[in-house]
Image 1: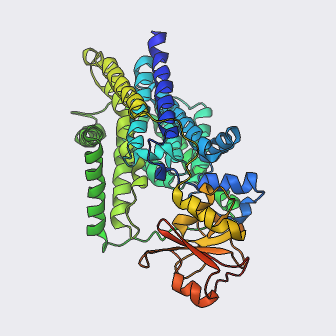
Image 2 (image 1 turned 90 degrees about the vertical axis):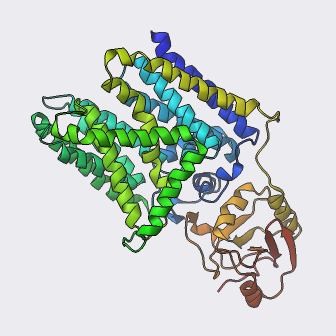
Image 3 (image 1 turned 180 degrees about the vertical axis):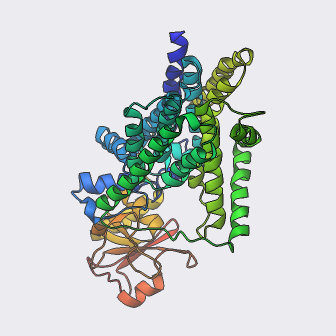
Length: 506
């Protein structure tokens, strides 16, 4: 039986090796990895570690993703000098952490063989959907997209399930672990409060009558979570020198638009994977049907405390996030829905084992193995499909063209729109640095270092399409600085080259 328990991890390793091979063969859409949002941590590492920059000079994201994203990426880039290889190492590390967190939680609900097989199958299935470009599963392959916060919530749920199974006083390690997880999560990503903390507290309130024997323990656990949130918020203020934020405002005026956008997210999931969509919808429908009995303690219900917590908090998390996104003036963003789409896959098999009678449980392990082998086969097929050699770091012709245009003039510092600046800086082989600016030529201090901004520049990258948004206006640059010394057409961009340090901004 021990072989059955650990064999799935061998299948996981084979699947991740196939995924890395497909990445190195350029069989996965490279725009997922090399856009300005996804290059946050590679750019940060390049500036701080390789170029001697300082964290205090950075304008981090509203969620700076300190943990576990920073240690994982810094370790990956420390092992592999090129960001191209570090990105692959990172998503392997992140997938292993996801599998480990799923196993720790699943082991509390099911035998080791079921827990390990389910954890490996879910990890490879999410990785497969991500490699195919299905959102929000692609975020398993990327750094700094709320996956770390999800991993910490899984760890917290595992601690809570253990705590709810104890009728007497809690060992101090459980509330201490909750406090530590909440501190690290809120310090890194405040969505943890909405996704996890508020949902757990809502479950405590809804279940307080049924859980009367452990009411004192509930207060201890709630206190640990809230104290961790406060500590995390204080550490965030201490570590972030240049805070930036998003305009989180709420109104009913955007309700119809947001409802359409959320419906489109579900429609997109159905197009990419009817299986994932069916599991997700079936999961929430089943939990909703069981909710009245679970709250009252009679009829069709979930009896065991830990399993009931997972069910009720999952529904509360979904409901709270749905309410916030329906009323938000900010655009609906699918990365905020990672727990909504990932939790059903993560918890379905272990919770079925906890809920089903003994005879029905026997089918779960073969079913988990079938899912694991199917995901493994698809990943291997992706790597083996079209024969293609392992490639080096991507060097698109557009970026090569920019390098060729700038090289004769020794131009190294330039400006571009946000979506071009980090990407071209990272992909260039000439060591150029591109500062992000707005359409009105103001510094765009968003996920960048203040060192990128100069009093004068050598070149500008402007869109060839005059209607392109969020990019510097060519006409305004020419009015301020006159005609460039040279210009070139590179892909969708026009390169305007000026004498060294002659390009001024307002």
